[in-house]
Amino acid sequence: MSSSSSYKFLRRSGALIRSPSLLMAIASCILLGILGVNEVAFRGANSALERGIQYQRENLLTNHLVQSLLQAEAQLKGYIASADVAAKEQYLRARAQAQKQLQELVQTTKPSLPEFALLRTEVSDSLEEMHTLMDLYSSGQQEVLQLAMSHYRAGQGIATVQNVEQRYQAAQTAQIEKTHKKTAFFLRLSQLGVALVSLAALLVFFLYLRKVKADRALQLARQERLELIVQQRTASLFALASHLQDVRDQERAALAQELHDELGALITVAKLDVASLTATMRTFDDSKRKEVEDKLTHLQQILLQLFAIKRRIIDRLFPTTLASLGLKEALLLLVQQFATASGMAVHSQLDDGIVLPEKTQLMLYRIAQEALNNISKYAEATEVHVQLTRNMSTRTVSLVIEDNGKGFDVDRVPATTYGIKGMQHRAQALGATWSLSSGAQGTRISVEIGE
Image 1 (spheres, rainbow, N blue to C red):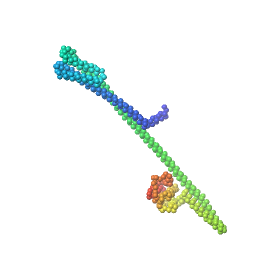
Image 2 (tube, rainbow, N blue to C red):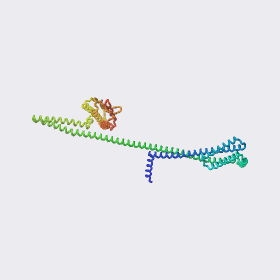
Image 3 (cartoon, helix red, strand yellow):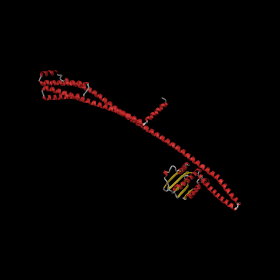
Image 4 (cartoon, rainbow, N blue to C red):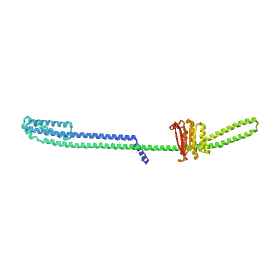
């Protein structure tokens, strides 16, 4: 496998490991496996415990059985020697109890050790011999009894039973030790299962945290990249809009200059021609002169109107008064024209001695022009204040335009309101501080820029 293939494989493996569905599948498999191990350990430990309890029960019954045999033999010997009825009753009870204990040991515990078969045989033989001696004594066959007593093992049977009991208990002890080992094994297996499931849970939790961290880092990286792209595009659009604004202003200025030069020259020539014709028509007779004078008078009025239209168009394209008289005089003329056209009471406060670059003067003039135009269209105001002030301490110039109109919601300005957007863009393009506030008391526009 090549290095590129190995890299791709590792990347795919890492992606799979970070997959939430795969993590859940791994966690589920581990959990099922651990549950299976714990179930096996529980069943094994429970079985071993039950077997140990069974061995303890067998051991206890065996001890009781041997004690009952010893008591029965002792009471039988005492009865034969003394013919005591109480000894006989105690012998019968001990014998019945031994038989019961043997039967319970056989039927209830069902032991499977080979030593138990030998123990069972010895106990049965001892009980049978004691029963034979009791029958001989009860039937009065003293000679046969004496002969049987002479051949009786005199405690050897009980000793044999005790010996077999010890062997049986030794075998039981070995089985109990095996049971304890199995129990310990299954308990250790259960501990191992708990440890494994804990480690698996920690591993899955670690992988999950790693995935969350990686996803968060990826999301932050994407967000930063998108924000950078938006900032770059916004800056590009802002620069483009500023460039287009400058180009438009330059084109307007060039067009205004061309209109002033070319059209102004033509109008001047036409006026001179009219004056020449007026002097020439004096040689005409009275009837023709009157007709020509009327036409020349009408032509002069048309030329005056044309001259006025030319001035308005030039002022709309580029304020010539701004270049010739300065910002204060241009704003004063603008305010006077607005007051005359709108009929509103306009109060102006325009400081002297303000010297600003040409672009800055044009920006402030255009903002004032657009603001007054909006007031005349939408504000329904009766009073307007225009201030152009200079702050000597901060070396800044401020333009403030206020009205007492109906106002509007600044936060709900439609995106198609290009007048306000244009004013804001003009201000920000030159690094000026722009503010707009509006309410029931009217609207206030403020622009502040350094000298």
